[in-house]
Amino acid sequence: MTLEESLETTTIHSVVGLVPGNTALITSRPFRAPHHTISDAGLVGGGHVPRPGEVSVAHNGVLFLDELPEFRKNVLEVLRQPLEDGTVTIARASSAITYPARIMLVAAMNPCPCGYYGDSQHECTCSVPQVRRYRSRVSGPLFDRIDIHLEVPAVSYREMVGSQDGESSAQIRMRIEKARRTQQERFRGRRIFCNAQMTSRHLKRHVELDDAGNRVLETAMTRFGLSARAYTRILKVGRTIADLEGSDGVLSHHVSEAVQYRTLDRGGF
Image (cartoon, rainbow, N blue to C red; front, side, top):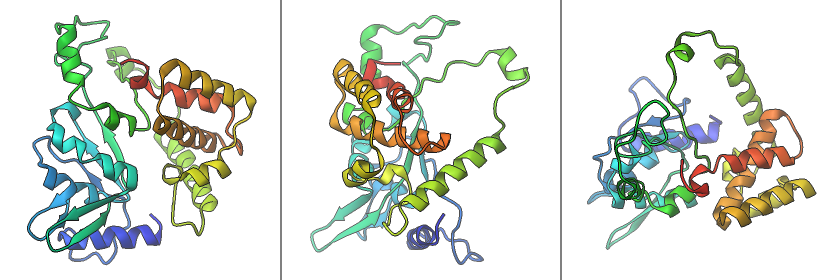
């Protein structure tokens, strides 16, 4: 983290008593993984004396929600403001407190109640209404605020035990760190640290598509009926893909790849 991010994170953790006694400054990004039985106050904060919730404790880090549809719907819905604004405001009769909540949300879910919808090796036992009810536990507006949707297929035995010819974790880490340095340099002095935090003004300046890229995005917006929120997220992801590739401009294949990561906007897994 940058020094400014470390100071913010340490301040939040000190409020809830999570700073280790021998640590003056938290320098590693937080990772929080609350259980699906958590309350809305536990997730976003609350109480008689308003305290930060998990979404603020994960500020500048990762909030991981496993079995996403198992969280109560009212708990998930309170995530919409933090994901949009990067802050949480807790209002009481006498005062209101705003805590920072700029997070990377990572969530996992099964495709259906039995877990085998779309699996080539197992037969799904769920009816169509059951699958729809299961997925409707997570609202469309919340899905719309998640930048990347990916299907993770089952891994075969041979894939698990066989040799891997792809990039090593160390190589991927180096590529990601280089892209992050590029972004920090791009936004130096602007109080934002990565592409995900760009506003519309930043998008106009740093994401200029060529004719081919505009055609790809226009086709996707029209065919899949994407929202304005999805449009800005595709641009941000496309800018990040270009950074990982070391490209100064966002090209049409960067836009195409970003569109492919909107699986749930295209009607399912």
